[in-house]
Length: 196
Image (cartoon, rainbow, N blue to C red; front, side):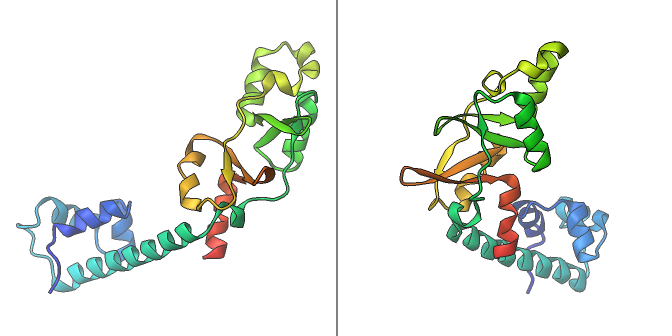
């Protein structure tokens, strides 16, 4: 026996699927899904159609559960990039920008001596360029364009704990004891697919 048709909308939303997305994945029409969700008592779908949708939703729920377990077991230290490229506060912004472009980085932590004191992002650099006279631009130092430092996270922190952080900042710095050991960006989160 199949679950109540009302469960389709709840499960679909819980999985973050749109009606259109679910329709494409299951081969039923989007209008069928819309009708089932808004007027389940008036629609008498075929058993085969309803089973197909519920089977797919169940498969997606199982895959999500497995992914969440893996996300909870993987740590920041397993996905961070151990090679950190820094900008120095006294460096000219033009030099730091050139390294960012050459290495395809959208951000750099900023160091003064051995301490991280800020961050340099594409957004921050472009903002500084727009507010500075062109003739003075070559003299602008990183300290004049840097933003707040990226958050610091212990290497043993589970990955799922940094997902929300990375929605609000471009990177997190990983540390072990008193030592900075890596950086995690949204690109590094993609390593989860390789590890799962």
